Length: 388
Ligand SMILES: [Zn+2]
Image (cartoon, rainbow, N blue to C red; front, side, top):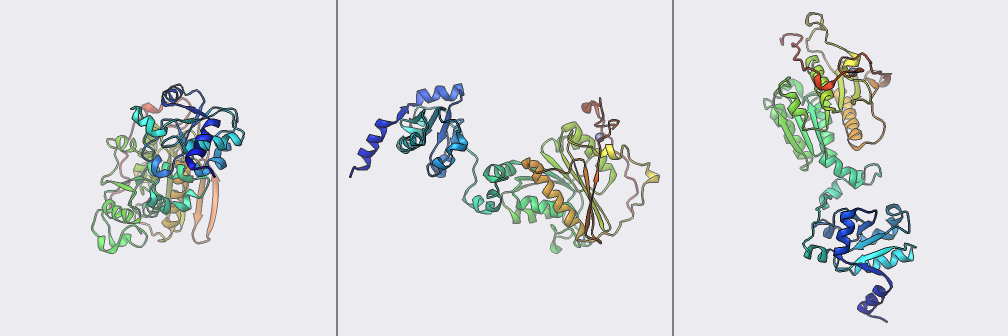
C-alpha cells in the first residue's frame, strides 16, 4: 500500500500546477479563469485570494458544475499548501475538466509573497445556528443572510407599527435599525406597542425599543434618532439607510418622507391603521406610484379630519407591522413580488384582505413625467391639528 506522501507525489505527476506569480497575473487580468478556494471555513475566514470562489473540498465535486458549467474553462484550485488542491484537481480531471491547475504552495505561498488578500464576510458559528432557518431557504441562503446583516433600515416611529416590524427585522438579522421617535413610553401605548414594557414607562421610546431589540438579537445595531423629522434633518438621516419602514401617524411626515425618499431613490414600506382597518403598500421609486401619485397635496389644515385620538384594535398594528417587515425583507433581498402598485387592505373584523391597484400618475408633482427630483423642495407642512 502506498504511503500518503508517495500517493500525493504520484497524483502531482498527473495534474498541472501553477505558481503564485502566474496566479497573480490571472487575478489582475480577470481573464475568465475561475479561481477556487477549497479550504475549510476556519481557514477561509482568515483571508482569501481576491476574486476566488469558495467551495470547501468536501463540496467540490457536488458544486463544480454550477460554478463552472464549461468543462474546458481554466480552473485554478488552491488550498493552504498545495496538497488538498492537487487531490481536488485530480478529481476534477476525472469529472472531465480539462484545464485544471493546482496552486503550488497554496495560500501560504501567496501570503509569503506579500500579495494582497481579501477578508470575507461569513456567518460565525453562532450566526449559522441563529439564522439556519433562513439559510436553508435557497431564496435566502448564506449570501442573503449576509446581505440582511449588512442592510440598514430606518423605522419611522417606535409605536404600534414600528414595534412589531422592528422586532421581526431584528430577529431576521437586519444589521442596522434606525428608529425615529421623539416620544416617551406611556401606559396607554402598551395595549399594542409590544416592543415596550411596563417598567419602561416614561423612558424615551427609542431607548426602550433598543433594549428589546438588543435582547432579541445582539447582532443588530440600533441607532436611536430621538427627534421629529423636518426638512432640515430628513435628507441626512435617510441618506444612511437602504429602506424606510413608515409607521408615521401624521400627514406632514408622510409628505416629507415621500419627497425626501424620491430625491434619494429610497424605497418606503408604507402603512396606516385606523380602528379595525389597516392599509399597506410599497413606494419603490420608478417601480410604482409614490404617495403623491395618490394624494398630490395635503388637505388644508381646517379641512383635515379631526385629530382626536382614534381607537385601534391592539392586534391590528401587529398584523400590519409584521407585513411591513415581510415587505422590507423581500425588497432588501430582491425576492418575490413587492407591493409596489398594490394597496393591501386588512379588515380585522371580517378577517379579510382586499387589494387595490395603484397607478402612477404622469402628472404627479414629485414622480411625474419630466419632474427633476433633485429640485423637489422639502416642505414642513403644519401639523393639521393642535395636540390637545
Ligand atoms: Zn408620484
